Image (cartoon, rainbow, N blue to C red; front, side):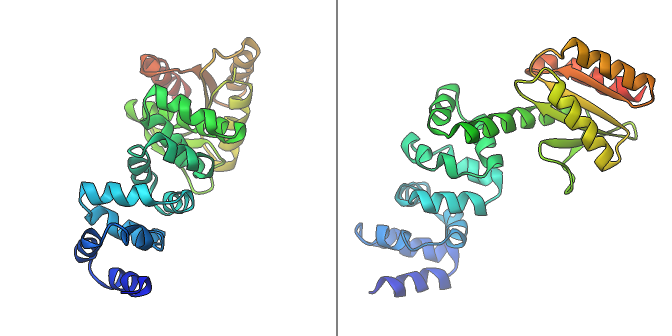
Length: 247
C-alpha cells in the first residue's frame, strides 16, 4: 500500500485504531510513515500508543519534527516527552526549543543532564533557558507562600503578578543579578500593570545602593523591595518580603 494511503488511513481513523495500524506495520514501513506525520498527528496518536510503540515512534522523529512538536504542545506535555528521550536526541533539538519549554526541561532533568544540555546550547539560548528556570522556581516559591500567582497577557517578559491581601505586586526574578536589573524591571512592570507594589528577587544578595533605593522609594510612597532567593530554604524571606510590602 502506498505511504500516502497509509497516512490517510491513520488520519481518518480514531486514535486507538490508528496506533493499532502503526503497531502492525512491518519494521521497514513505520519509519516511512512516521516521517510524514505532522505535529497534530503526533499529538493525537502518542497518548493512545503503548509504551513500546511510543518509544519507537519518538526515536524515529527528526530534529525538525521534535522542534515542531514541542512548539505545538503545552509546555508540561512537551517536557514529559523530551525528558524521556536519549541525550543525543534532546541535544539535537536544544537550540530550537521555545524558551519556556527549554527552561522547564532544564528544571526536570537531573544535574548531569542539565550540564550536558547547556553545553550544546548557544550562549544566548542557554542563558535565557537558565534564567527561565530560576523564574519558574521563584513563581513556585511564591505559590508556596499562599499567594495567587499569574502571568498577565500584557506582562513584560519574566514578570509575574502576585495577588496577596488584596494587593497586586509585580515580581521580577533575575538570575546573576544584584538587584539593579530586577528592581528596574519590577518597578517598570508595576507602572505598566498598575500594580500596588513591586518586588525584585535575585540569587545574589541585593547591593547596598539597591536596598537604599528601595528604602527611599517606600518613604516616598512607592512600595518596592528586593530580596535574595536561592532555593526553598529562603521561602520564609520571600514571604516576609511580600508581607512587608503591604504593611
